[in-house]
Image 1 (cartoon, rainbow, N blue to C red):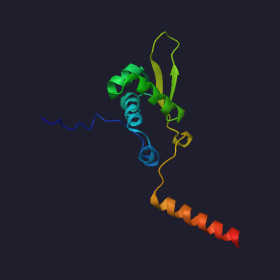
Image 2: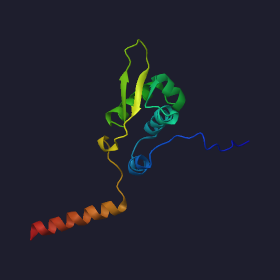
Image 3: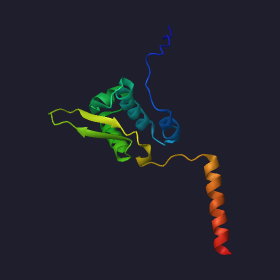
Length: 131
């Protein structure tokens, strides 16, 4: 039996993040899966940060723990997520989603229109330089 839709259970994400960032991100499948787990545990629960372990992320994504570690560090290097270890002797890491997508270190997909405009501008620039 199919689940009934419940409008009270959803993850709230700003449209500008979806339109300007997520829709143009070129991430691997693993990176998307890990990112969605962190999104669910933060924005999905209406909190700023989430305490997660690599093993927990691994279980929720069905990705091997070693690959989870590598994938998380890839997202950290791109500045899409940020983290801080707690001072307690625990394996939990405090993760947040960096909502300032302009600070992400990624190449966004460009629309066909953007590529055409850039190519034409480059062509015009080259023609002006040769004149």
